[in-house]
Image (cartoon, rainbow, N blue to C red; front, side, top):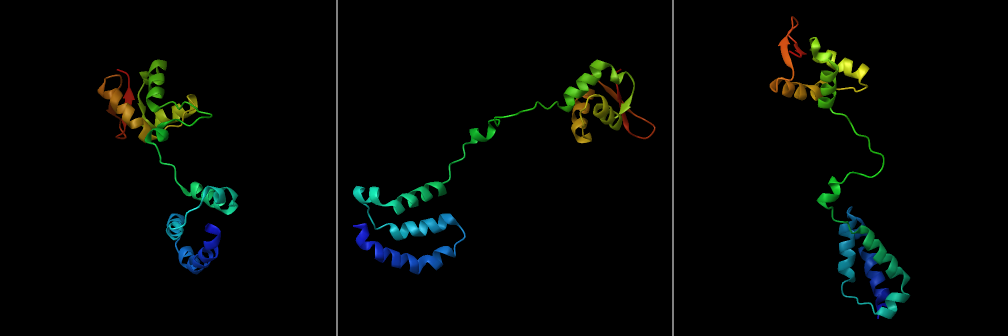
Length: 154
């Protein structure tokens, strides 16, 4: 059945090819081709013997997008993973080590963590945990003569 109409179909598609190719979206192009092919039916015998039809079906399958599952995005990727130590953990270590027995500014803490803990911290990473430690009274702070906060254990 399809072999008789093949020449007609080929002629219609060649006439439409410039219009179809003018669309940038492959999905739109595919929808137009599907609309043109909508009236044709393929028998099981012809489907098995038609290699071009198989290629077209594989191409359509490739174009279908897999729905993104929200849970898939949250799963950690497999492979090499490193546990990154957060600023609060570094501050806990510094408190345990007795670093805050003397007063230290934010920049002092950043440089000490970089040198002695091999952890380069940003001021924005440290400011939140330092404020929480002050509120929970694990650390105290006061302004020094330069107007910067100095953190210490009291």
